[in-house]
Length: 356
Image (tube, rainbow, N blue to C red):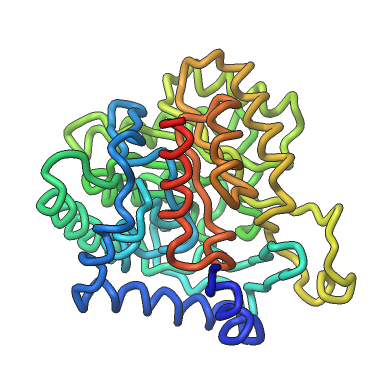
């Protein structure tokens, strides 16, 4: 019997969602700083049978934590102690910014979903950089063999105009690539005005080419580069992005970000209306994210790494995405509903399935 759903209902379901997130995240970090996380890791560490290779890196598990949970690199070590094979930090922007006005994070509990319009609130690339370097060094010391992987997700600063977006992304790439195991260009959040216009291939091509060149130059090595796309793209646009990724020699595509759609929800209409604008994540995204993944698989023919995210709740969802062409799978929203042992449960079931 799992006790966390009851705990969530009593302790967090009535609380402002962003405040609940901060409290929960602080608890995870406290477990790490007190030493409890290292003890816990003996029970949460993924089975060696789950080790996965992608874009030249070995991951302890194919299942990791998507960008959005740890926006500023405060809890990378703590989160890996829960069993995540990788943690994607961000989204981080070239300039520090407070994000959109509060409230900006809303749960739709009946749908096991979340609506957010956070707006890339973060401390900025220069401030996050030393946290990433410290976390990477710590993980290397503690895991001399295969260690959890650190991804870094970068986006456009809100105050920067679209015509200056490339220079802004390069600020982040220059600072963060040396500390990143892989880098993700986020052009698909609905919460920064105009950002999704950069998904147009004519805008995307020079952006990705410039970021890739700057990342490798700054790090003195090849930093795997991926792009994260929205589920709201048309099939034709998805095909265009796939062709562009192949043309540029990108290392992968992350599919998908949150959706601006609201169809098929079970929550009361007034709850949905009260939440307002923003990106929807969680269980309602399950089918569309899987459709996009399959489309990308067919369009790329296995020539690059696909990372699946969107509506992932359990080991069955993870396996469905691996079977559909993903090499790595990420989750986030279900973490809020399932609690701190979510990743460990998924890893145990995946390992059990591989033995059977």
